Length: 112
Image 1 (cartoon, rainbow, N blue to C red):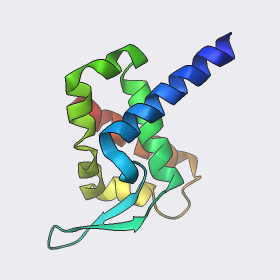
Image 2: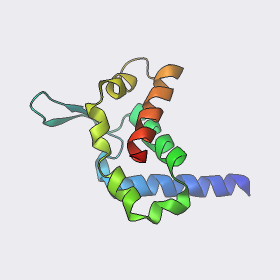
Image 3: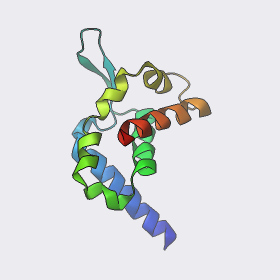
Image 4: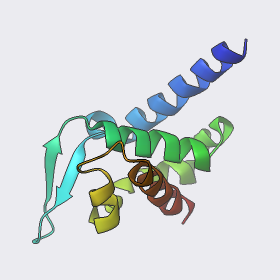
């Protein structure tokens, strides 16, 4: 029962992220000097874990129906402006410190 409950919650979080961010939900983006956003990859595992875990650590599944959560998540691309975040999703992405950093940055962004 616990596994089924957790699996359902996982599916709800991922579905929510996809519904708000669409096909670029877990894309790696780079902000160019002129402000343009360039997609570097369609799916990046480091972005995926940062967004999924950051969202789950910040909001309970029951909070996902609140408009402010969707509005804030819709602005998540702003984290790519943060050099510390970009470093944490680039090179040696399995390093524990980088994992913790990128999740923390997403949580801090979502809590604003």
